[in-house]
Length: 307
Image (cartoon, rainbow, N blue to C red; front, side, top):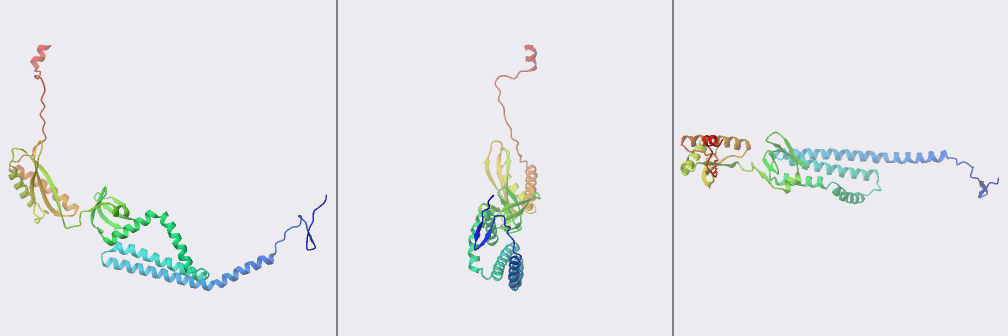
C-alpha cells in the first residue's frame, strides 16, 4: 500500500508522525506571565491602598452625614444620603484603582462604559430606582415625618421608617405594613397628625317630640365636661337632618390629633351625651315600622267556627 508524503523544505512529513509539545515554549510563556505579574505588583499595591483609602473615606462621609441628620432630627434622610454618598465614593475609588492596575485603561473609557451600563441598569432596576428617588424626595420635602400618623391607601398607622425602597408604618392593631415609596409619593396620603388638633363629630338621633334646641345645648354642655375636648375651638351642635325615624343633631368637637386621643375622647363624649339626654328626657328613638294588612285578623273564635 502506498503512503502519500508531503515535502516541505526538503523534509518529509507523514500523517503518522506525532506532534511533539515543546516544553521550552511552555516555560517561556509561564515565565512571561510571571514577569508581567511581578511588574504589576507595585501597581496592585498602590491600587489596593487607593481602594482602601476610598473605602475609609466613604465610611467617614456616610458617618458624618448620618450624624448631621440625627442632630437635625432627620435621621432617615441622613441614613439614605449617607449610603448614596458612600457608594458613589466607593465606585469612584474602584474606577481609579482599575486605571492604576491597567494603565492602558483610560478613565474616559470607564466613564463611557459606565454610562452605557447605567442605561441597561436603569431598565433592569426601574422599579427599585423609582422607589429610591421617591424615598429621597419624601425625605427632602417632608410631607410627613417619622412618628406621624398617616392614612396611605387602605392602611392607617404610625410611620416608623422611610427607607430607600419603602415606607414602613405600624398599624394601630400592631402590624407592620411596607408600602413602596413610589406608591406613597404618587398617591394621596392623609396625615392625621400634621396639626396639633383634630376635629371629630357624631350624629345623635332624637325623637320628634324632643326639643331640638335643648338637645343641642345639653350636648355641647356634655362635650365641654369631657377631659380631652379642646375649649378652643369650642364644641358645637348643629341640626343637620330630619330623618325617617328621628331628628339628627350633629355634635362636633376638637381633640389632640393622635389616634389614641380621638378614639378615647369620642367614646367619653358619646357616653356623656347619652347620660345628659336621659337626664333631660330626650329620647333616642329606635327605628320602627308599621305594617298594614288587608282584611280583618282572624280571631280564635272565628277559627273554631270555621272548623
